[in-house]
Image 1 (cartoon, rainbow, N blue to C red):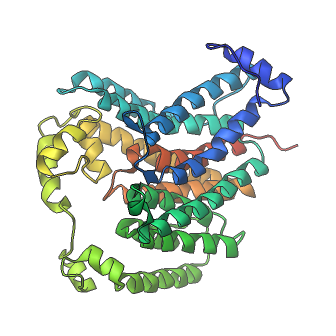
Image 2: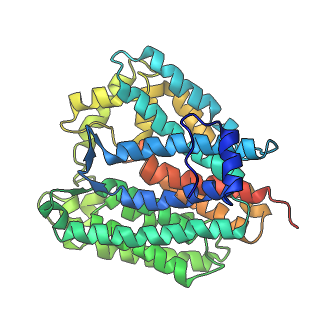
Length: 411
């Protein structure tokens, strides 16, 4: 335990204290980073309030403040510390996000909250890039993901057995499903260096998204063999795609997914291809959201503004369930282009690192690429952008770890 510090202690004081107590600033940052996947799992429980807010509200805010503090401590401990994470890719879009606060017509703290939740993952990425420096550091991330899957398994089993309902709690199915997509992509990054554990991990994520009844998350995970960046044998890729397709067809005809796809509780793939399936209001609401977005086409209505407008055209829903539509609505065409350019540049940079690296750097960069691609797929029907605790924090943890490990000089 660290000795208590006076409120407002400077980062230099904290850094000195940590060194004197045998705990380095890097240790503090590693514990913070390794806790991120576990936090995603723990935050799957809903209904626990502290005062007026869900505990998850305090959780994401704590991660933001502690992350910023740890960055300061790192710089205080070593003034030569450099942020390796390519934040310049994202700066133009982040500037526009925060500038958009100025033209929100119905401003509230919720707009600021959305901006902070969008910003938090970049703090995680930057801290990971200055902290992660060994293979063991990276292995700690995957160990944390494994622990998270165990926690999520118990949560989803409790959900399916009705235990949450009996004790007056809820399971955040959507958030957990999106977390599982990122974790499945991360674990698949080990192939072909390893096969057994990554395959078991990937299958576990698919089973859990199935238990959650999440269609898009399951489809995204089944698409891993298509998106996987390290398979050189095209025959093997085709074989894995065939396995995924068979699994997908089998899951589609289960009672769980039949109820998720059709009002009547049964239907065929042909009906899905014709668009005759449950969209839960998406197809009706999207044109109305797009029409409103066109009223301010270039700079949008401002960060968080979808939460005000969407309930007017989609009952009991506060987000458009399409991140690209959301980004366009809130930051306009300019914001959407900046967002897509930054995301593309990030993926291209990671791909180059993968192609030029070896060993663990290839594993973690592949995990980051897969997590990023799957994230973008899920963005077509959901809003993972502000799911910082569950989705973007773990994803940018992998991205930051890639850049941190990349710049370590071999001894």
